[in-house]
Length: 173
Image (cartoon, rainbow, N blue to C red; front, side, top):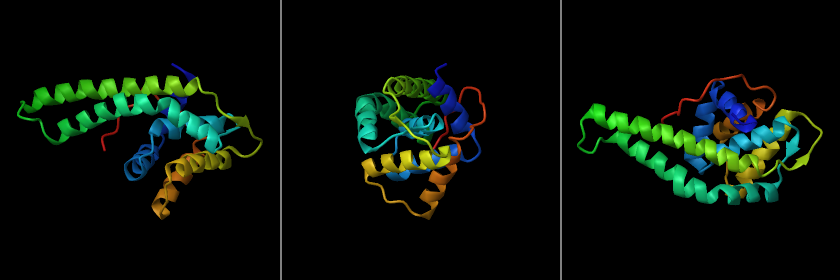
């Protein structure tokens, strides 16, 4: 298991983190893997400016749009409607798609981990994580409300010391 994947599993499993990540994903189109990469970089003292975030987004864009998002969409459609299949059969297929989606996200993190993490910075990790996340949100052109800001604050705290966790269970939005 790569260091980024291990960090991401632990961070995503922290109380409230999955909800915060999915809020930013659903409301602003945030790629949760890039978000977690931003936290991982901060944990190790690396600041990601807008140029570094743009490079990361560009490096993962094809994989995200051509592989991860179609799997996620198919999984979500099967959750809403079995398309005439018996419920148990549709759920088995959905579980397989969910596993494939999680593996696709792990592969995306391999792409991210090879990108490097920007310039080393000397400051508190939570503050650095906040700056990294805001650089990403700036690239996406996001405007945050109070609840979005709370999600960012919660996630930024994970750069300090996320709990350890086993393999993640994909949250279903």
